[in-house]
Length: 278
Length: 282
Image (tube, each protein chain N blue to C red):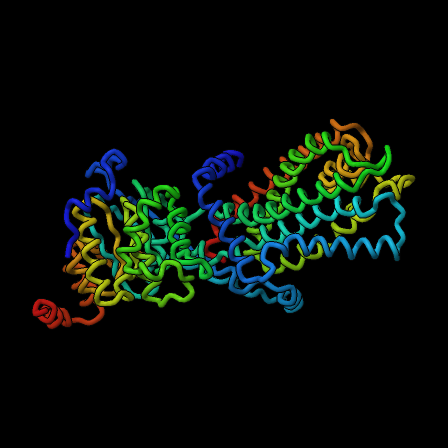
């Protein structure tokens, strides 16, 4: 099992050219038909965040200092998961014309799909960091921490990317075999949105004895890594079970590598039938 | 019409060429079997499952189909092996197995050197991208770097005869243009092994002879070619060996003329005499 995975991983560098081409192709095709072009990938999350902000600030009345900053730190990573899993899970099926005619390791298609979304996410994050740096000063409890951001955010996004790949890979294979999966993915992503502290904070359920269960949510651990320096101005901690930065990083690493290895292995098992079924 | 020797020589510098000794087959299939399940065509529905438990009647799972059976085939450098047979005989499956798109259920396949295939013409093109972009995309699938493609690009465009159309999205290409570009990419990437599926059906009168010339030239250069076609005359004239596939099995293997005659006699006894005369006259 581990051996075949190593073999598959070994084959990948050969296809880095394909990966670059596929990413460029996706980006080009996506934006060339639209007047606003690439701006859409900024406008869309921007408007979504504005809507959520109005709803939660004015109607539900969540009281948090600089709530907009809190929301940005949760929404952008969540939308990355949503878009990337959507894109990655459908990658093999969308490229059915290709894989019936040409040999290529099919994970390349999934990686390309996720990477396209990663690039969008990186640009969004760059703008978000700039906004937070300029506007999110707050007080000693809530502020933007420049050096912590520099140190924490890049590896956190790296782990996050690995995790999303690990989720997308098996889904990409299975969604070829069973078309029902598409609906399940949509539902699961919606559930994830409400079960992850994105628009709410774990500080809201401070007293609950079930709070520790949230530590099982991998997406939370990645969001909290990002949110710690960006919003709280702190080193990361795991708000569900406490503990210091080391525990927070450890959990994130376990989630990322565990999901990736498991996901890739599962995909590897299904991939030899995909060209016939798709 | 055959390209001058000097030009063919510079296609690939000697240093780059992997050494393929004539004794080693370029393509080697050892006891290859391929089974298809048609499982995805109709997924089992919950409705059916309930119905089956209530009526205690089990629906029959679809019969698996053997598309390739106990196939042993070797192709040596400098050979053009023709594959003939009816539709559904397993010809395309064989090509897909050789190009690794499909994995054999049993048996092993070995390929030496760079493999290039024209499985379905225009394979892997993205309709929204221009001809030029598609060339770079297609070569990257074969593991060819951008830099190497820069060198190959003029040859590919020139061979396809599409110089004015390379900045047009391929969705506006005619099917002949698609085919020409696809074939041109496949033969201009210096392959050691070339798989061809029905190329002659599409190209026009200018392009067809060019294809045939290239295939001949490849043979002289010591490349291994597998040639699937329904054009029996082309198989007879072009190939050095031919195999007849039926139900995924090799029914006959030998000189192209022999194989074609056996194939024809099997279905239309007595027809070969007339045909041979006709083809000789041409």
